[in-house]
Length: 349
Image: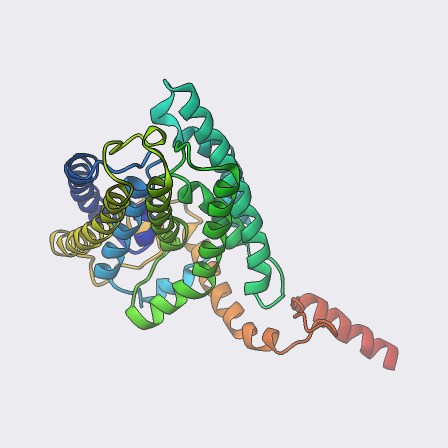
């Protein structure tokens, strides 16, 4: 549910979130018990399919139903220095504790628990490496983007989730899954997310498609490959089935989750719109719409709104400035520009 909320954060009202939460819990439980672990009995120890894939595409379905924010509050969407630093602290905590999440259901099996821990850390290291490498390349050589480091560095934890305890997964395989997950997630933030917004009208506030959706799809495909090459004594589900049948179950589970989550999300979003419509005066990305905020909130929010407009105005001039002979763009500080101008004038006198 927290993953799904990331796609609609700032756009859905508190009442709409309550409606979506109730509907998602029911749909999630039914799909997980009846389809994934019932009919198909998929291998998914870390919840890449049942949690990350479901949560991401259910949230994206809701986001599509709610539409793209176009009111004045839409300009306030974004991060600042404080939120970026806090998010990086959260990334550090998740990096440390993610292996315990992947192996939470196999604590009674020492071998499986150890494999989950080692494979998850290796995958996280791979995604962290890929996110740093790809972030700089995808940003035109300007430097690392905070959003990539905060999110894509964790994508390996999602990618390894479905295969974390399999004996067929070698350390090199876990590292490779992490590298691919991190690269895919970084590409998502740099290219896929803005393209989905411009072509499909899909507004993903927190980029859950990049961190949870695409790496989970990769995990589903990887699980099909690994269970197909594993011997019968190396798998936990469908040990009596042929390698091809085991792979088919994994792919069917991945596809079924993708479709069911997206359809259920769209329907939940439409029900939320009908049951708890946002008023004509509702302002997106404005906490006062559903919370008792401090007295200084309005002034701070207006300042953030004005800052967004100011940064947008400066963006064109910033892009035209060459920071060095290597083609790197410099960051423009208005006070520094004014100081330089005054200094030049003083020298001229």
